[in-house]
Image (tube, rainbow, N blue to C red; front, top):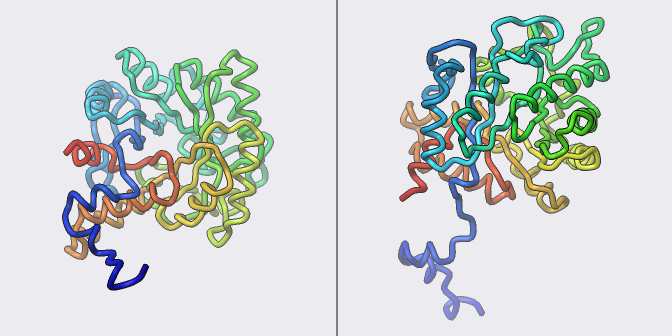
Length: 323
């Protein structure tokens, strides 16, 4: 059937008709809200991410109540420690900032799923994602540290852990550590296809985690590669990942789509800091309609195949999607 018998515009004529045939729908249940936590009290706006804040762990309770009231199902915690050293030891201390934050949330009897980012870049004085040996990341020594960190997070009450360093064998090492210490029920959200992206700049400002020398290209993925991403995803699944992730999201929609076609595990996508700041800057300059752009970007991520979206827009989307 072709024109004039078939007219595609018939189903676009009114808002009600467009809604009936809409193929992709966002729900607030799709979102995870990232939080940057530092020791003590206070609230600090992040200069490169207007509208996003670092929060003192002692002031976390009010934020958690608001997030829960909005219907957002989960938060992801990133820690800014008081002290840094060569091996990121603050990451696995019982009274570390993330451990305190998890216990604070759990003390509120919150229904939120608490996801702990599991990486060392925020905790090391050199800004790399593990232990260094002669200026290079020592992969296997880093696995031993990650095992200590994940057990500490699990003891604090983490509902889910998210290793983000792209360290070879990290999912297996973390799964074994959790199981050995009686935490068989804690799932792993693996940053399986994390690219060495230019879109991380504002996050590194927020988390104070920029490398002090060199870069992370030897352990994060090369942006032109998609077959490699599929190998990395399968490796993490084989090692015990319960959820796999593609990061960033917007520049890697094709990777999300390929992953959706080739694996049956839940897929997360991280709508990263640079994507957020890019929209905010363009909107402030008057180049884009802010709300329409946000909705279009997040819908594209969902349409590509993501089951869940980590986004700094989660709170705003909760208010929009209520309507």
